[in-house]
Image (cartoon, rainbow over all chains, first blue to last red; front, side, top):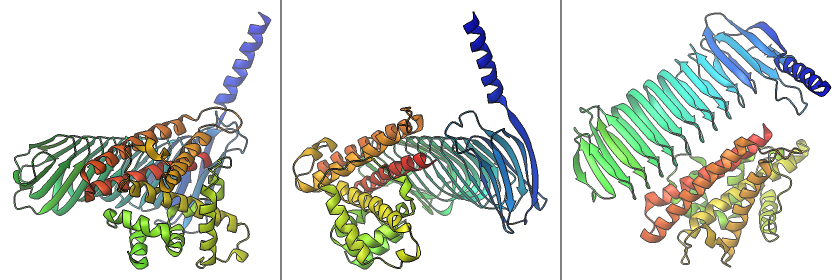
Length: 289
Length: 215
């Protein structure tokens, strides 16, 4: 009985220790188009653009953690410092960072989830297992993750996204994409795709896009399936190649070449754009919107 | 392939991957281009701490690589070690990683078109020099994964590294598939380009594992 009481007390102490957090609320002046670097290993990071020439950080952080917010003119650093002791398992920080809309933003984390919105400057994100969710107006976006999923919404942008096992989902009104995964699935929706390069090893690739005139789209997968959905009025040359996977043309494109077994050369309209899809064992399917 | 063409190929990300085989062959015999590749490869920016300490490669691997490093030091470009104490080892370690990566890439691609083409990764065990080298480097990559999957001192498996290992195995299977197809159907350029891409993915996974260890 005594032992149970002692254990209960220890559990209570541990629980209190786990929950011990402190509020942070700091602010520093920053240029409207400066650089902002944000680093937090565990927890969450939410980034919002605003019209003020300042960077503000609010949130809660573990009691043993320290928030550093510094500006040296053009560059602002938001850093959650973790103790150098080995056991930081229960320490995390959940922060909201408000920064000038046109800032160039760089975010780095290990397992913190990242959300960002209302940013128009270039954005670069690196994560290991944290999920990344961006809804931004940036023209230049670069996201890397190992196992975290990436979800990206942009208006007009050049997008680079790379994941290992994380899925990548991109919605861009107009833009160029360069995306690569190993086993993660890739989904791209675009009203006007100006160019694209997408590669996976075993992840499936699903494209629902309208091709801009002169667009060059290359899709390659080893064992992942590829689905490409196009509007019927598309004008493009489309070359499909699958070593052992199947190929289905359900978009009504005319066959201009290929043996029909491993290679299929198709054309839609006058062939203003060019699409090349290659798989080893993945199936390829073309669909009409 | 000339040194100039090889360096241009190494510098541009969108270079024609069907030339990877010829670049690999050139790199195997040209010390100058090895040095150039080591300096221009992103892997050279890795700090020495990212390299595992406890890997024991086969005895015949390191003498070859060390010889290449010594040669590289002689023709080393603009770096002045005397002005950057401590960076000498860091640079050497980075070059080591880069050279190992390049040789791995070159040998894996080359083995697909060698007259005694292998049926799978398992046949690297056959007694020929290239296969032994490839097996050694492959073994080293796997060793890195194993080392990194154990948290220091705790014996705890890091699930993220385990996941990377699983991904690496998947890529290795894809490489084996592609190599079989090339052996069966010949050096079709697209298939060669796919093989080169898969090898690069495999190497990048090792880099990710190193980054994980750092983080």
